[in-house]
Image (cartoon, rainbow, N blue to C red):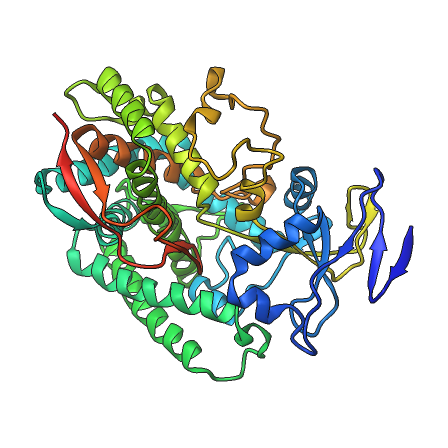
Length: 463
């Protein structure tokens, strides 16, 4: 059923849910200025209006925001059938090229089939030793009473792990050059996506687009150099790049040089950027929640004693896993999803016109009091039910930091194991006391959700 309410169409789902109008926008730009000012707060305001909210991202047709896990699940599981992935802008494409995150249709299916074997559980097991070794080396360098910048420390650690596991090299210059370029690229993607650049055609030159091209050129040069080194050496090494170079599709064809570049950059972001920011948020939350920090220490002491963790300990550390899951609930690294409706698309039994851009936000849904009691509270216990199930009644797709459906993040297992092992190594030896209060570090929604400033902490050795 469709009626008119002012300038917004009001439709009903099969169970009587309605599309309600969002905040009034401005001519031509719609709600883009309000969205660009604070995307996270904007999505929360849309969520509070209803589960289906109409809004305008620029001058085009009305977009649709959805907040209910049931409908989010429909969007995620119907991608590649009745919904397609949306273009996230020229800055995003400049960095990621046409990798598995961006590709569509048959091209996406081919690339996924070639990349997926590199990050299956068996392969992640082989990377776990590198993850732990790098974390142990950092722990050996820290001293009691030392002040550290957690953003820099976690970024350097996860960069090193990424460079070793993906590229199979251990040269500081590789990590530093790629890391600096990634920082620039991430900032420019966030700035373009939430600003007027989101409405500009690809051919319009802007200073931000020039900066991301320069940053991408650095990344391309580093990746190209490492790929050439691999091709001149032993392709049986256990790193991700060697596996990608050896992969063949059903026709027997290898990934092209451009495809290798696109997939290694995608895997680097998944293995470095996401885990780095998750760990910084985790340390902040632990610093301001002594009860949780003590419970984490108790599990690590009980399970590990005086030894360092390995891959098999991942399953033996459910509370440590819960700390990571709860961190990802409150500070999801990927903070929005968006798709374009195709002919025949429906949500909740309601027809969605072809071409409608549908949005949802992990940030808004993860903090919805309907699905999470005391949603602003850091409470890992909500994930500590029997056999790995949540203790609370949490609907499927109320928590979706890695997306879901056929395009779920391929690096989910890698990222979870990495975060748990790093946390286990460092929290077994130390507690970190942050200098700032819990409300003084804000999130910046760029390519990933990053702290808005340096995060200084004092290292305290555990007795």
